Length: 283
Figure (spheres, rainbow, N blue to C red):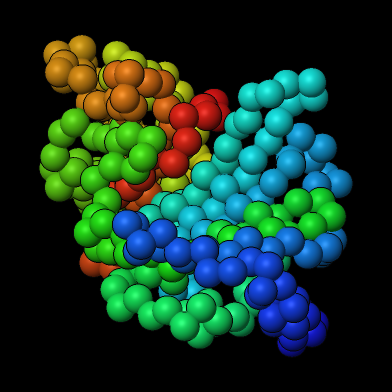
């Protein structure tokens, strides 16, 4: 099936090459092509969720970097996004657990550099955005040298802003969890990886914290207590444990994912949301 799609795309490209022309913006060192084909391979997702309108997949140099599921209420212009940064282990773990490879991203093998006779030598220069709809797939091919932050895959901010983050020292947080786990006689047969999804409001308070992936256990309980325990003495809750997400207009309420892993030997690893991909809030 992939071979057939690739062949059709190549034939289509060459058939329209004279009308598309060479769309190059020399000032930005960018070339782009947009193609749409009929495809219904992901219909089960749209049939189960009528508010789901689009699924985006963004590839850089053939590696999937982000996934976005876009929802829209009936008779509304507003969109809500379910966002996954595939370079953050927390998002990746939740995505794999929730969708289990059921979303089919088509990856056409087209060399846009060869088609345009234009070669750009820099990291992440070859980009593909796949927009999946109920009855079609749109491919946006782009050649562009990105900024240093994107090239490092550790950007400080996106065009949207910066994510919420833990205000304290994550190493000390890990040590506190390790100490609590060490007091338990056995941690066998528990999930060694858990992911929580929280809501951080503009004041820096965490108003919601749910276990999104992994089973409830003594480990998940220890992580929850360290993150946002209602029993924590008030003096230890000041200053705020969280810094809210920020966009151009200021602090905003947002989701944050917290990934925690219990390693062999009893050490603990904790990391939090790496990028602000959406300000849609899922309680």
